[in-house]
Image (cartoon, rainbow, N blue to C red; front, side, top):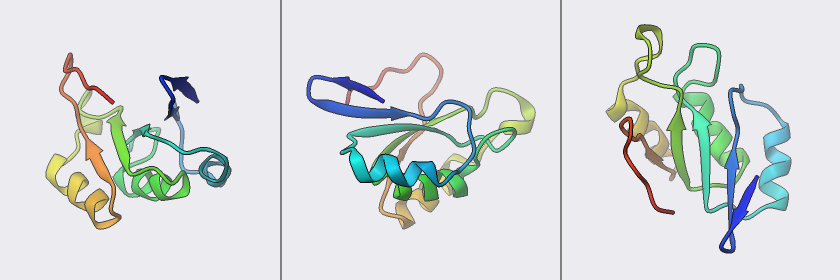
Length: 100
């Protein structure tokens, strides 16, 4: 958890979907979450979308995707999947900045 300027941000690191995420969603009000979406060794977009619901966060920056050939993701399909869960998925390009 990262707290600044009255906002809470959850950074999951390299992880898979787990039930502990439900507790995070119960005790925190998150402005943003950073979740892996690249599938190899971490969550894929389907698991990350489920995780966003576990943590009750409606804005997610995807991590660990498009860096190697075996973790290239379909951006539009991933965003559509999150949208179906009423969550915004933000997939930044390398070096791109984002303001919470």
